[in-house]
Length: 253
Image 1: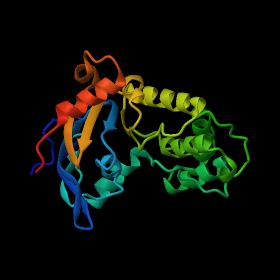
Image 2 (image 1 turned 60 degrees about the vertical axis):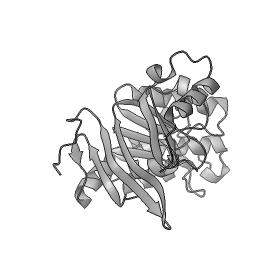
Image 3 (image 1 turned 30 degrees about the vertical axis):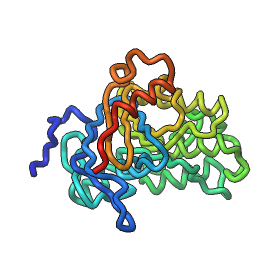
């Protein structure tokens, strides 16, 4: 197959026939998807495959079936995958922090893993902490921070390398209003010119954050497209969600 994807470079990220299985069970099946710049909300029932899809997009899972394209070029060699990972930021659902370290020291450690030049680490760490609304001078260990604050530190580590692609697994879950507002601003800012993909169980996120929607169920993409077009005429997030799932239904197979 040719290196250039079918979208001719229009999509930032494309999947063709991607599948992922573990323990003899396929969690993703024949996923075909083109993700353009903007904010993409991934929705679906519990166990639908949202987290698995995001982990594949983030390069955490290597799909045994199918192909991925980044900016029109197929990812095939270890070097290509590494360069791809260098351009993305990933924040898992469970806060990924070191409880013994302060936010500043933890981010400095992550920055070294991301091979950010040492001279730039200090200013960049301070910048991303301010971006997510945390005080760079706060010396408390991450283990002493609130859940929302730890989620903000996790988001900050995803922003360290100034990614062109941001992947967030249920970023709004369990957040207080202040942390949610901070996260909303980050997603809206990045989604203006870059690609943000986030999963959510909160239907209000569709209206507040998403420019596009992906519906997944039983490991298959049921529907994907522009949010305004997909939700036209709906009166509430609940109605929108029911319409999306209803329009996305397919026979099992």
